Image 1 (cartoon, rainbow, N blue to C red):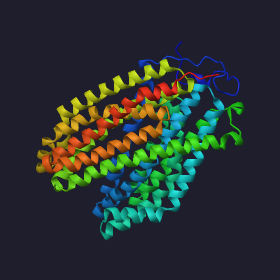
Image 2 (tube, rainbow, N blue to C red):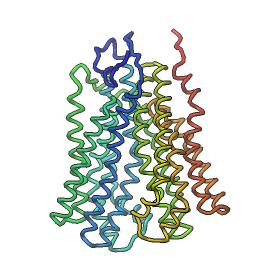
Image 3 (tube, helix red, strand yellow):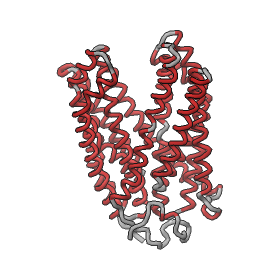
Image 4 (cartoon, rainbow, N blue to C red):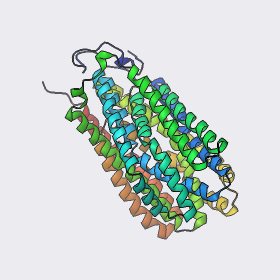
Length: 463
């Protein structure tokens, strides 16, 4: 019997909120997959608009130091918030499992735990703002004029940290309940407010970089306020967990363990991309610029794959919570098939139109020519990485985070070995081959372990 993704939490609860004898079986259809994939793909695609808007606003000021300071400051936040993205992923998986089990009080408890953890981490980042600036400046080492701009931008924008991380928890909760359209709406509130106020404060009022940063703070705060109102209004009195349930040690320990593993996985991913850039820089400025532009193609493709991975998170988590293997198998097959299809389609588009995109992004003839030589590798990355994205979604939804962490560490070790082993022989081609191996190993290793983890998850219980 087909049910809407969120119907399980709208049905009367039995017992303590677990399955309690209630039939939690459900089907998974193509429509279920795309009902989450499409809105979240559009939501993810709005993110690059923020960077483009901020760059355009500061660029209109005509101060190169201000533009450089914005770039360095943005890198600091990209790193910090990427590491903290576990708040979104971990909350999605745990919430989806509670939805599958029909445990309304646990859905509320997971959200409150995630929100408390998000605000706590956000306040910690705010307190560590001076250290974040010093580390960022040490890593990039910009000039004196740029340094002053970075300090201003980071100081103002860091006030957004508690709101930004709270928005991760809110989005994770919304996606865990299968409400992709609401997730898109909330992202539009955050990003739309951010864009409008950054233009107003930075350009119209002439506050420059500080105005752009303040626009970001207001956008994150607006999204957090709207999100909190929407989420909390979705629980009635009987669905609200008690303080004892919220602060139950086992629940907090599980959330922290899942988030810890996802954070390690994110750090490994950032390490691989940083090393890719560092080795590419050794081939000269032209090669560095060409690799950077080509990696942007992969990042564009990742927005589409991320949307499909989000669908896998919710559907797999719900199947685990419901203890219903047919839904798990169906969701896995559908998301893998669609993910690989998107990888092939995206790669084909990049192969056919990649040179035009490169020409749009740079007027440097040397960079254009160099990028054309390596375009085929960039076009292969969506296909090589498609299975990795989907498997990440499956493992996040199932909260098998330690396995995902271990396979990421293995993949990173292979990348390091192949990058340093192949580049002396094949140059930049060897570096790109190492990246393809990294992406492919992530997906294939997780797929190889999947049957064992599935048997363990759905093993019959002995009375």
